[in-house]
Image 1 (cartoon, rainbow, N blue to C red):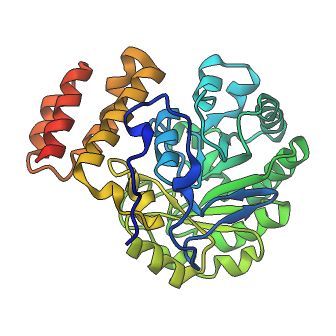
Image 2: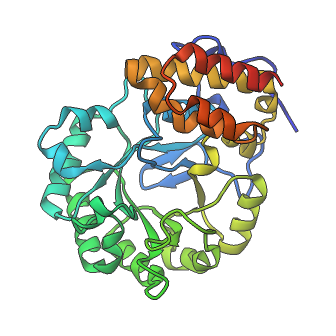
Image 3: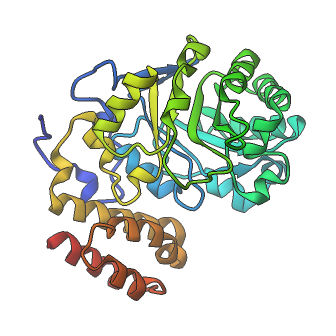
Length: 348
């Protein structure tokens, strides 16, 4: 397998400008290739999933540097954006943001969603607007947003149309296979949003009822590409290896792959899927770990270490003493201790 000839400069200096060369696959194939979403061209079809409390600016940049062809913000409240919430706007706006990049909005009011999308476009911080139709969290669902939209496909279609009328950016959606095991309606739902004008569709192969538990039900993704036609269909759910990409493509003929928890603690998964092997060296992984924490300190200040904890436990997942380390570090706030822990782990 081909490898880079020299170590990327950003591993030693977090301030190094973004270099898009690692987003190019070693060899374009049916599975891994560039992707067109409306007028937007992605360098490859590997997408970093939006994850609340995980995909902050630092992690989006890290994954893009490691090869992700498209990154998406944490879900942001359309209502909060229309109210000019500084916290919400800062969450989706990152000074070092790698492009292409989408801001994901959630809401159930077409007018508010349209105003929020228009405001985001005015900021010129992203290349697409993604509408969340899959979040299972109660505080989102109770407003009629997120995966609750799986029960109201007509409203979902109205949201797509309203946002498309408000912006010139591509408008995409992410949904689930249904509300529950007794109401799996993904095929009809996808047809509805595609007919409404969605320019890409991502489906997480779980129901709202399942949340993030159990195994993704890939069989429910079969046939979705036929419904989407020329509109890109991106598969999501339990993708954590090259074998998973191959299996999903063979089963679904999908146009792209959205990776979520599979890259937490393993952000070099994107490089691996693109055919690079440089980042499988433990010394390089340690430098990625260090770079990640330093970038988070620069972005978040004193709160960075607690926010980094989800990533820290991901990195340490394969450690023989992972449970003991999690217990010892669950309240740690000293970045030097965390850095030393990472150094010791990747040196063994």
